[in-house]
Image (cartoon, rainbow, N blue to C red; front, side):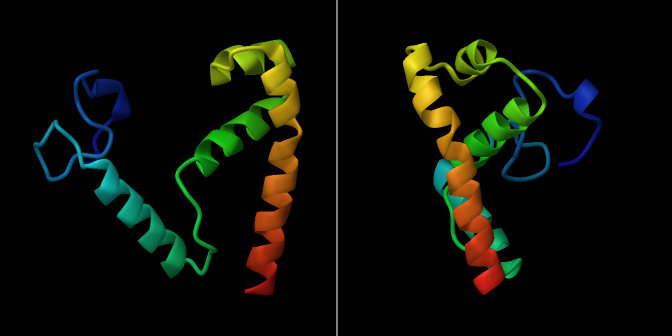
Length: 102
């Protein structure tokens, strides 16, 4: 694990199961590690989809157009992005409230 990301080949896993393994961990192992990390950090349990929401919000906050955001997210139409784009704030606000209550 570790290493310079610039020198890692495209075929290598971002999260190898063990040193030298290019196959990577299973989705179940990734999810379990994610849940354990959130629990140890005192955060509420969330799914990996939160990273998609976070990426969308960061791009929006950086001033990205809704059209570019739609392409990045792979939405089927601009209407889907428009509907979801604003929900990102609501999801993050709820998570923030949950963390503060914990």
